Length: 203
Image (tube, rainbow, N blue to C red; front, side, top):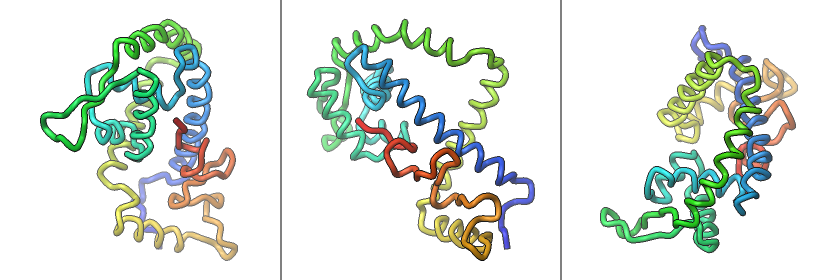
């Protein structure tokens, strides 16, 4: 039996997540090209950009970007080696240093802003502002749901897997189109979110 609420359009949500994966891959590719002007990559640009508002810890940066702590630590290590960020003791937790931009790192991000502005204007194209705000609202709600009810939580993962098993047909494909929420496959290329280029970033 499908335990999903009756008003949830699962097929639409599958398409939304597929588009998010597809857009994310393209944003990372374009971001690599753009940030190369400042000697960065998309991954390093994302982490460094979060520090414009002030110092942070690796754990907090990882939570903000929804990435593994180890991956963010590797990115921070590279940024520090390149002189983009530095670290200093955290008075609230000596085990978790504070990461902050160096003057050179802040200048590199400042130098990217004109290019970023032109890129965003081109990206927006003729999309109405109202549509952008609706998309932002939906993505934020999905993010909040993932933070509150992460599928990797033991009980939730079992529930999702059981529901997915109940919806499969004889050949093992889902009732919709062969993709399941558990394996994270995208419509674009069938790669999972755990594979490079499909939701994960390289540093």
